[in-house]
Length: 326
Image 1 (cartoon, rainbow, N blue to C red):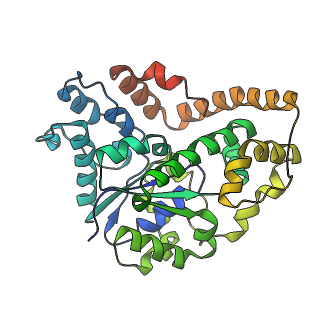
Image 2 (spheres, helix red, strand yellow):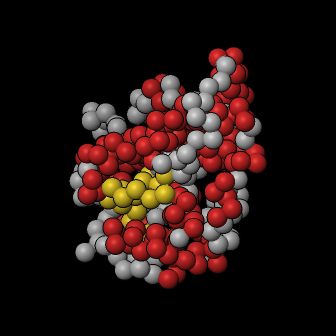
C-alpha cells in the first residue's frame, strides 16, 4: 500500500522537474512546485512558538505559487513544525483530488537525513545525471548562473549526500539515472511506481501534452521550455558542443571519484587544469550570483522578500548566507 510522503532529490538540473512532471500526471500523486521553505521550518529553534511559525507559513510566497489559498485556521490541530509541513501538503493533495503527496525540491537532498528523521517511512527518489551535463545547465540557467568550478562542487556535494542516504537506508532510496529516464521512460517509470507501491499509469508518459498548465507562476512557466515535448535523448550529451575543453577537464578533475563510482566515463583521464584557471572560474561565480539575484528580483521579487523575512525570523539568515555560492 502506498504511503505519503516521498521526495524527489538530487543536484539541481538533473531532471528533477521532468520526473516531477511525469509523476504528477499519475491519478494518485500530487507534487507541488519547489518548496525551499520546508527545511527552514524543520530547523527552527524549538523555543520559537508554533503560533509564530503558523503566522509565517500562511504568508509563504511559494505556497501562493502552489495556488493554495492557505488560511490560519487550516493549521488548527498542528502541534509541531512537521505537522505544519504535512498539513499544507495534505491540503494541496486534497485540492488536486489525489491520495499521495510528494515533494520535488532538489536542495532538499542537503536535508535528507533530517527529512528521514521527520518522516521515518518516507521514500526518496535520487535522480542522478552526468556532471558535465548538469554543470552545463547550471551555467546557462538564469536561476543559477553557476560556474564550472562551483557547479562541479555542487554536483559532488549533493550527489554524495544522496549516495550516503542510500548507504544508510538502502530500502528507502531508489537511484534513478536521468539518462535511463530519457532513453527508457516506460521501463524507468515502472520501476519508480513499484518502488512507490502504486500502479503504473500511462498518463505519465504524456506529461508534455499539458505540462505548462501546472506551472501557474510565470517564473516557473518560463523555466520549463522543454517540458512541452517528449523526452529528448539528444540532450544527454549536449554538453559536448557547449562546454570548452578546459571546462570539461575541470569538471572531471573535481568529480573524478564520484563519476567513477557511478560509471560516468571521463574524456580526459587524470584531467588537470592550472590553478589560475580554477581561480578565474571561482571568480565567475561572483558575477553569476549577482545576475542570479537580479533575475530573481525582477521575475520573482516576492520570493526574495519572503525568504529573507522567514530566515530572519527563524535565526537562519546568516548561517544560510554562508552557503549561497552553491
